[in-house]
Amino acid sequence: MGSTPAGRTVSQKRLEHGDFMAERITKRADDYAQWYLDVVLQAQLADYAPVKGCMIIRPNGYAIWENIQKALDGMFKDTGHVNAYFPLFIPESFMMKEKEHVEGFSPECAVVTHGGGKKLEENLYVRPTSETIIWSMYKKWIHSYRDLPILINQWANVVRWEMRTRLFLRTTEFLWQEGHTAHATYEEAEQEALKILEIYRHFAEDYMAIPVFHGKKTESEKFAGALHTYCIEAMMQDKKALQAGTSHNLGQNFAKAFEVQFQDEKSDLQYVWATSWGVSTRLVGALIMAHSDDNGLVLPPKLAPTQVVIVPIFKDVDEKTQTVEAAQKLKAALSAESVRVHIDDRDQYRPGWKFNEWELKGIPVRVEIGPKDLAAGNVVCARRDKPDRSEKVTMAMGGAASGIVKLLADIQKNLYDRAKLFRDANIFDVENYDRLKELMEKEEGFARCFWAGSSEDEARIKDETKATIRCIPVDQSGTEGVCIFTGKKTTTQVLFAKAY
RNA sequence: CGGGGCGUAGCGCAGCCCGGUUAGCGCGCCUGUUUUGGGAGCAGGAUGUCGGAGGUUCAAAUCCUCUCGCCCCGACCA
Image (cartoon, rainbow, N blue to C red):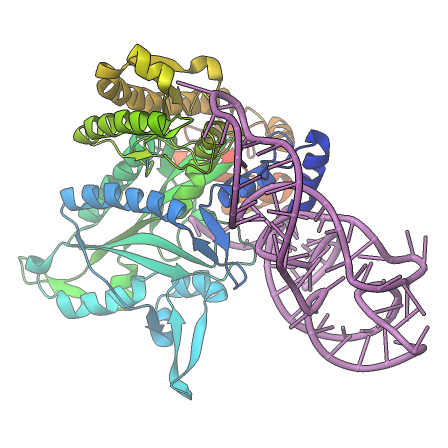
């Protein structure tokens, strides 16, 4: 991975290509990190903010987040959850109540010390996550088993003062949803955590078209303050892992810290069981790194803000009138099928320019309607997942709407299949530590292996290979094998990978 | 915090080493014209506190000192 600064790369490329048009995107093979930044900036998903580590989510990026929100919010509500909103500021004393939680989050918290021109009596933490303030309220709301469960979600911003940031993947402030539930029993909380994990898995695969491993975090990777943490992990095109969602069984840790008890049916006093779970704007980054190519963004149709762009091709007013009219008819037919369509009838750009523009922005299907098509009663469709010109298909005008609906479904499926093929081709069963080291050094992919080591063993492997245990997958073969590090016999298999 | 890089027009850069008139180039933008099925051509035109502060000098984008900021890579993390 080179340390080539952005400006340099662009200028070098221009010299090579003798090309002075809009900026080009760094090739993935040349510099993956730079390619990612080029896509984010040039597709106008985000921009750097005046404050270090912060970003502006531009309309193109925010629209993707809105679609993510819409889909997930529906799934949460379908499973009985309700939305609420808790404050941004958390009293310092709350943050201090749960030991592991404090230790986990204190170093990365932004703290407000002054307000209204005066020093505050008690410092206020800008939420890095809301467990503490929410459980301070649950204490007020929960008295009886009849008050349970509480299934609250909130869509919010949080702040974590990270040392190193990357657009969407890790920013100082980010948007997310955080679910916080309260239950009467461990089993119920456990079921909730797993139910959400399943929602996340389903969402990742069905909407984002990204295959994921779902599993459990090891002790050293779990959430600060949880009994255990479940997660979904995805493989990006550079074969690194991205944690795409987490779901925690918090046990009674927060209930005890905030003294939240309820009376059960037998009038016995019990501490409440808790879960919390979240996904963030990082998912936008996942989308980019999973599907996009050297021409720019590639979006799965289900999350693409615009699914179809129609480019009328004309060279005079008459042709414009006719092609735009045809475009509008097609748009109406597609809208009737709930397809999100945009007609690009701008005069100031020529068709070729528009093709490249919409490709860069990741629109799944582009429809071209020109005079030749009008004469033949056709439209020409180009699919973003196969940008090769030979992949263009011609459809009869009459059947175009239904044809495009099918095409969108096919693109959605193709993106998933492609990502899954890539992932499966880059997972290796590893039998010994030397092979793991070699695999990580060459950045060949994920390693699946038997594991019976400790947190210390894990830390040492991280030191030596930079790889961590991404998760203990739920799906286990059940066979027995030998731990790659300790040599002990075990049936537990884990996934090692370098992670974002 | 360590390593690297950058700050000059809206964007991307050159100029700096070796100080010297009106600080250039491409894209974009404006006007006109011909164009329009994979990033159009021609002709005109507008645009700059050279990141900031001090200093050296007859003269500073250029040399010196200090400073601010951002980006990339690594250590921490969703």
